[in-house]
Structure formats: structure tokens, C-alpha cells
Length: 330
Image (cartoon, rainbow, N blue to C red):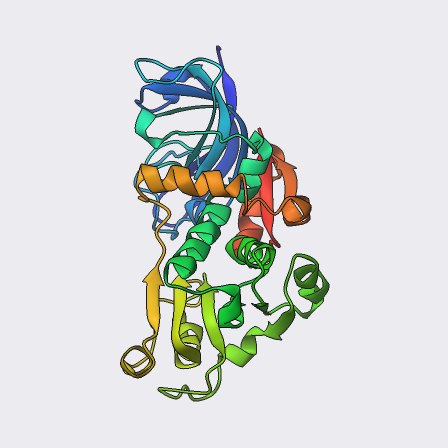
């Protein structure tokens, strides 16, 4: 390996960044025990933030974004892995505090690596990626809070995005009645095709006045949106219902009260995919390779692009113009 290709974001002053394909060498890679030949990555909202000057997630520049990667061990170093092992790396500091997956090679700490579980290909693992992993964590938390298909309908917000699309398909496969919320009227057929029994406008989650308690509607919810819509969702949860929240695309402020929690026993559970413990991380990936695999919908949700197409796609995901998942073939 002399040189290899990577997408590099560099900061030029305080208010400008450049996003270009560049040739790197092994010396440009960060420290870490394991060298991986990357086959696939994916595009997440956080990757879009890494490509703009005010994204506020990158600690140092230049940076190779890409918080997901799947590939093959090239050099295991002193780790427990072997050359040729197929592996997955998602989150931790990948693509944020050190070079990530938009590169033909990556070097990472061994403790970040998950062996590719039997039942998944490298490409399939990246159709899931952090978005699918987050959706699966959300579904697991609803299960752990006792929400079953018999409990009633489950709402999924931001349903055409990565986390939302995956959550709709997973919940439907498990037998839940899924209500998908979206701002795109043109995506109704897509959402029903991947499992939604009903599609509602996101405007319905933003009434002019949010009451402390409103009509009980949902047994559970998967919410990668946050903000004011989350306050309305909490006010409309059924008694004992649970909301798994993982995002903030609608903002960080949630103008709610204690009433849903103390009068209806509602649970608000946070979903963290970045520092999820390795034992749980591996168990989630095994479920993504088995009962949560959504085989018939993976290629409805995932669309493959190249490194050359990445800059435009990173802009599109920030503008809310990406449906489902974009998979990067390295």
C-alpha cells in the first residue's frame, strides 16, 4: 500500500471548509492496533455535520468523515483479530475525533471492532450502519419496557430518514402496528411498502398549543426528531407507554411537563449508539443479522453511491433530501 483514496474535510479559516478526494498514505492514519481495508461505509446526519464549518462535531482538522465502516482486517497488530477477518466499526470517535470510513483504509483501536455476525454481508451491515443500529436499540428498549405488538400502535417520527425507515421496517417485521410520521406526502407509498400501516403528516405532531395531557394514542414511539414534536408525543402516550428518543433534528428544547410521567407512567428512554457497551453492541448486531434483518426491505431502504458522489450526498442529508440510507462503496 503506497497511497490510497479518501474524502478529506479541512477547515480554511473560521467560516469555510473544503471537501475533496485526496491521496493519503499509511502515515496519515491515526494510531490504533488494527488496519482495516474498507469495503463499504454509509452516510449519516452526523457525517453531513462533519462536512460544514459550523457542524460542531469535529474536534480536529483535517478529518476523514464516515462514522461507519465495514471491511476486512489487513493488519491485526497485537489484537485478537486475524488478517482476513470481516468486521464492522461504528461510532465511538470514528469520523469525528479521528479519520473514519470514507477511505480505502482505516486504522482503529481493537476495542471498537465488532466481528461481522453470521447472516450479514458487509454491504448489508452498512445498509444498517449507525442508523439501523440506533433503530434496533430503540426497538430493544421498547421491548424491555414491556411494549409488545398487543400493546397498541407504535409511532415512528422522521420515518423517511435512516433511523426512521429502519425502525418502521423492524417493528413491522416483529408484528407491531406502525404509524409513520413524515413531512413528505410523496413518500406514503414507500413507507407503506416497508411496513407502515398508517402514514401521518408531521404537522399533526405540532399543534398550536401542546396540552400537558392529550388524548391517549400511542403505546410506544421511536423518535429521532426530538424538539416540540416530542412534547406532543409525550402528552399523547397511552398509560405506561414508552418513547425511545435518539435525535434532535427538530431542536433540543422539549416544552413538556411532569404530567405524562406521574399521571400516566410514561417512560422517556434515551438511546446512545456512540458509547454503547461492547457486549450489548454485539448482541444488537446479532439481532440485526437474525430477527431484525428485514431482508425484503434492505434494498428498498439502501441506495449505493461512490466516493465521488459523497460531497453532494452530504449536503443533501443536511437538507432532509435523503430517503432511507446511502451506502458508500469504497
